[in-house]
Length: 213
Image: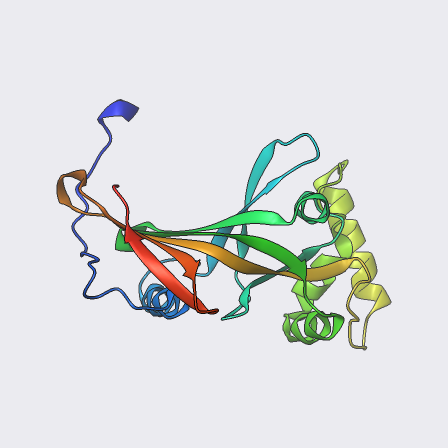
């Protein structure tokens, strides 16, 4: 089958003005809970999009590790491409691809570093092998071979044997404060439902608008 002939109907459900919650945070929490209860693999996976020093966009998938009305949190190596991009331009976008539910959520916002205390608390909660992997990976840098990566992992495993593994000094997290949300629900005949939330007055309020799909 040709790529151009690959298509399906979107018939999971609908999103309308009556069912849309007033707060985008509440709407996102509802959909996140439903995604986590569904058969979707990695329901907390999100694409983070940044711009580099040349203005070139790049996208990568990370796992959402915190969410509340303050924003969306993820953790990463601070030497990674995404961390360097954010240091130059904190404006980023997020995308949650819940295609099994015929849903997508897009978020545009501003990234800022989370506190060292938050980083330490989260790092301590990670499985031990994930902690070691954080030490072993010089993220985004050229790597000679898989064997070199595994040898570095084994070296750190030996170094930290029989002791708690500290947070690497080059590891941290970011919180994205939302400036816009868009919720997309696939519909039959390609007549999808799409709603935008933008900040409104009074402070903390949001206004909604249905967008053409």
